[in-house]
Amino acid sequence: MTIAIKFCGLTRPQDIDAAVAAQARYVGFVFFPKSPRHVTLDQARALAIAVPPGVAKVALTVDADDTALSALLDAVPIDILQLHGHESPARVAGLRGRFGLPVMKALGIADADDLAQIDDYQGVADQLLIDAKPPKDAALPGGNGLAFDWRLLAGRKYWTRPWMLAGGLTPDNVAEAVRLTGARQVDVSSGVETAPGIKDAARMGDFAGALRDT
Image (cartoon, rainbow, N blue to C red; front, side, top):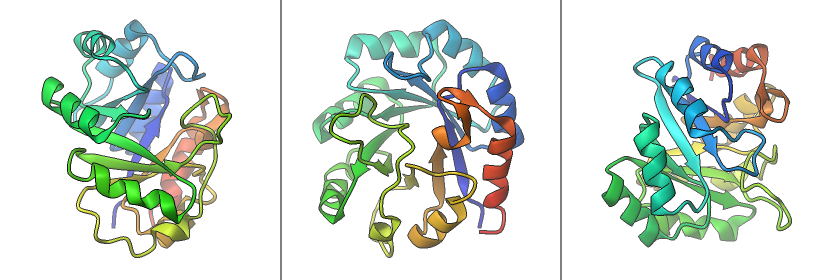
């Protein structure tokens, strides 16, 4: 079965080319100034315009207000909003209604207790991104190269929304992560970089190649 790939944190035209060559289903742009993968609206617009039809363009935001989101969506042709902050279920529902775009809510997981929050968001988000919970002192809510115990997700077939596995995935471990979790979608950022924010085309190709036989 084909596993859908999201390459997140793309910052350069060659990253788009590499993602398309690796048959990505999604590409992600980060709008969070603290991140080494942050792009301006002008940069993101130029990148998004180069994305071919059939590849979904995702905007990763962190607790952005309505004014910032309106400016982003006015400037950049985006297909999906990814909320990677502390957005409540009510906030997710409100943004989905206001902007008329599918919403992907990122949820951090460290132990079994963290799985309970998934039920709170299933009715309001179009997709869920199941990520490693960042350390308490982390500057970034994601993209830290951390994984969690994937066995926590084994047999979780009752979820009603499509979901995507993230957190610490690399070309070397993604096949095992899919085997343990049953994920049909995966998200990678730091795992295909040579330095923070610098994607490596060869690693992106290797990541996709590792999934071909899953």
